[in-house]
Amino acid sequence: MSKEFDFRFEHALHYASLIKPRGPHHLSSLLNLEPIPRTCLDAPSLCDDFYINVLSWSSQDIVAVGLDDSVYVDSLSARSVTRLFKEFGSYITSVKWAGKEVPNTLAVGNDSDLVTVWDTVSMEKTLSLQGPEDSRFTGDIDWHGPQLAAGFGGGTVKLFDIRTPQTVLSINAHTRKVCGVKWNGHLLATGADDNFSLCWDLRSMGHGGKVDKRGLHEPLWRWPQKGCVKVSRFPMS
Image (tube, rainbow, N blue to C red; front, side, top):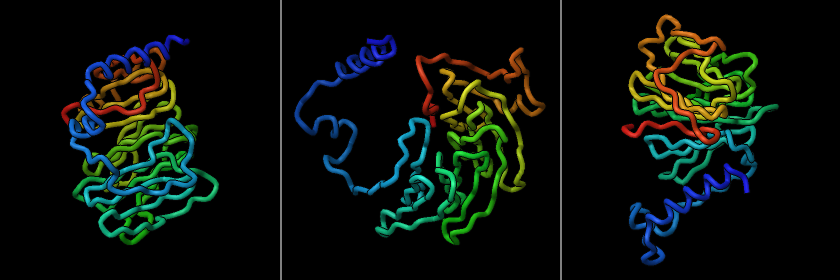
């Protein structure tokens, strides 16, 4: 039994010990969940890739999902499914709805160095944002108003502003592929396959920030982890 498995198994036992079984619906009642799903969505051609983030739920109760080379939008209230687009020669790796200010805007990343932005009402692509040329992977995307953060396969995190479709800031954040990005005000959390979770104060990155001997930017905080950081999320967000 590997050390990594030992660690996961011990933590699973710890959390399981915190919940005392009191009937089949006890856990659902604790989480305020219904005992049966609200709806079931077919997901053919869902890529078997641990690092992708291909599901996003909008403020208008619309689910976007990336299935292989296509993106679908599913309106749960209208009970309708529409294919937004099909991208030949690549597969979808990340999708993320924008905030309530522009609720019909969806950002999409794939296994290349481009992030595209779509208007899901007109079904048209409105922007193409260039990532690092050597990335070949867009691991995760997150919005903060009109700004968009995207993590790429080479460890770089790029910030874009859709009002001026250009790179606002490029951060040499990690040594391996970025799998999670999350905004909270002027702070940005990132996680990657190098087993680190980092926090960046973007106010101090305006002039490029400090760089260490490896050519990596120095974060505000750094937390070593036991494995790949799939998702970074602030407790207060």
